[in-house]
Length: 245
Image 1 (cartoon, rainbow, N blue to C red):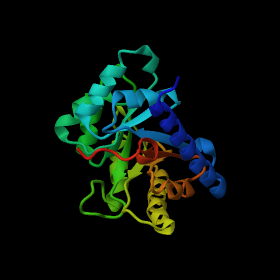
Image 2 (tube, one colour):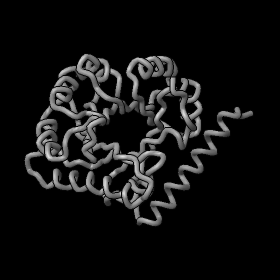
Image 3 (tube, rainbow, N blue to C red):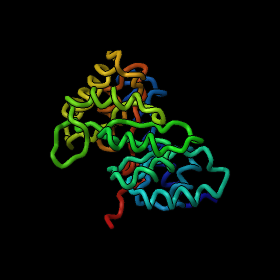
């Protein structure tokens, strides 16, 4: 017999996939271009196990200690070996070693010094660490991220680091209610990505964008280019509201 938590999460995933499909169909976006990153911060190991049981495999965490504790528990079971861990929180220099050792993806690199440390500290027996550059897309003083005008230079520098794979750009736009306003920020992020890809100085082509959350995923899908993967960072629409402790 399935638990109440299983049934609730399964129902929410069905609703989420329906929202995604409707938006993909409306905007002629391939379903395969949209990936769900389940934001599991402040959720328990049992919540993550339930999410895995309904088919989710990518989990985003904001807090390093909490994430490593969950990862270590799940690592005891071989059935969870194919989980991929994404770090989406702010990065302090003294945390880069543990980040480099414990995550498959980092979405929040916003300066070269951090990228250099992640590259130097990535274990040689692990695959290259997949990263996104976080862009302060609306130039907000209270948010992290590289400035728009400095993003291309940072992309060129980071693309040369040996133990990193630069996948794309990430942004957390200003909260807006109207989808037209939401799309404006995502359109700008897409433009920056496309401009970077025109440069012969960047050693890789950026193929992904980390953009869109529970409240604005339709806008992110609407601004998804062909041959680009959009990672939707979904917390509330899957797990419900979180405790603030």
